[in-house]
Amino acid sequence: MDTQSRVRNYLVRYGFFVVGIFLMSLGVALTVRAGIGTTPISSLPVVFSTAFPLSLGTTTVIINVLLIILQILLLRRDYPRFQLWQLPAGFLFGGLCDLSIWLTRGIEVHAYWAQLLVSVAGTLVLAVGVWMQVTPKVLNLPGEGAVIALCHVTGAEFGKVKVIFDWTLVALAAISSLLLMGRLEGVREGTVISAFLVGILVRFFSRRFTFLARWTQPIKQVETP
Image (tube, rainbow, N blue to C red; front, side, top):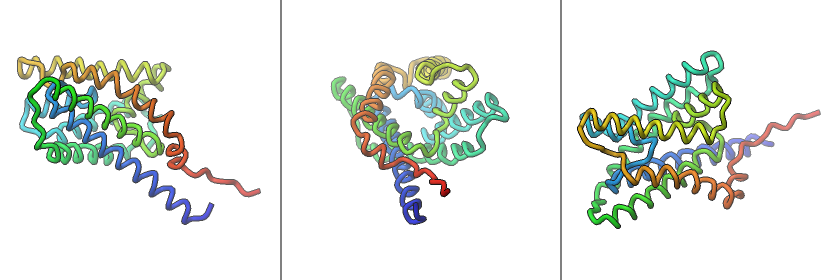
């Protein structure tokens, strides 16, 4: 495979990855605007951004850094150095979260049916973003990296660990919200909707859009005899 094709492949894959991260941030912002609970992975950042004078992007970056540290502590020498690129990816996601919050600033919903609609729409956008982020096999975001590290240490299946990890974050967010503000913030029925729908939707996109998956796969090095 010639150099031009490889460069094009990298541009397509990393472009797909970045667009996916942006859509993830937009999905998170929509669930925040819905006001009935955000996604599990963003529940802690939302709580801390509400309790303290910090933006959602800032608290997202802090949580991402802590998740990277958790991976290093779990894997130690087995931690792939390449995954340190999760740090700039985490900063990018945090920055895009703040951008998406700004872009959705005009969305104000008060009727419960409208809140549900915006929450489901946000979950759909988030799922598309997750699918686009994982499909090109470029890099893990810190949340997924932490789940993979836990799988490596425990030997458990990714799906099971992912469910436990997400609901642990939700529980921590609920406890933190009650302790810091005396009320639930960022954790409601919208969180449950997101927790169940995202995985289902990502699997649906993966099965239905296999041509895009093939288009964004890394080019394998062909060994010459």
